[in-house]
Image (cartoon, rainbow, N blue to C red; front, top):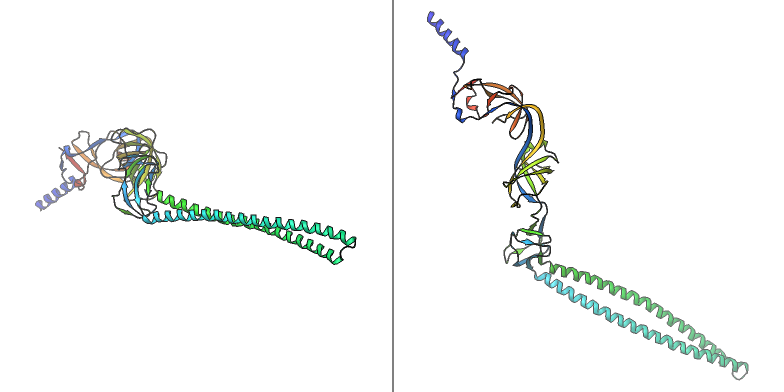
Length: 397
């Protein structure tokens, strides 16, 4: 009985003392001291420099690459011929348009000559009719005098009057024919001129298509991409070249989806170009998520360091807010916004560390706010202590 009581008493004592504190190597741990003050909340992520202005040069017509005049990295101007294409169909269409235009111009010249000749002939007919009418009027006057003197019969006088009236009517008809001819001339010339204008437009369009086989940059900058080879056949819409302006760059940052919730346009940003840090501001936030990240466009407030170029890798840090008079510490391995986790806090002698529950508040890239569980001056272990989950206290060696 005495032995059983002794064993029971020993078991109760061991249970009360708990597990012995395991030894942990101090050299492999990361420590920090809890502080009070201003905490700048930031989020960050990797990114790259991209041109603000990009011109994609695409094929308007199918064709075979006959010549390439520039290489990637070469400076170009708006009129610089980047490459030449060939397309027999486009060349034939331009030739046919030229021939159709020349035929239409010849037809217009011929039509104008025919109409003018017909107009002159009609004017000659009218002049002849006028002459005949003048003679008929004089004959009528003479026959009227002879009739009144009873030299000729009345029938002869009436015949003269009728002939004069017939010639007057004929002259009126011929004049109407001339007027109608003038209107018809205007209409025919207008129709032929309209056809000529149409053919000129077609010819200009075909010529433009032919000219476009000499592909130009279309903008001043640098030819960044030219993914073609001599003899390659390209289809309409195919990418021929990419021309960028290397003097105006912006940054595209990839921010983790959860960290991008509080980003707004206009927030201050610091971009590390590996050749210096440059101030910038958020200009645009992509509304979609891709591969767990959100793309944030950042524009610079001043020039970039020398040597900066498109597609250069960078790092960006966006300032969310500056918290005043808060308790904070470096971010531990585990723990996020509004979470309560167990953190090992060192004792005064730095020999032991005891697990205490800590409630976190807002986070930043490097720091996290402490709402409960720690006070300024406390030293804590920020390393991964998941191996010691079953222990509430550890000994530091």
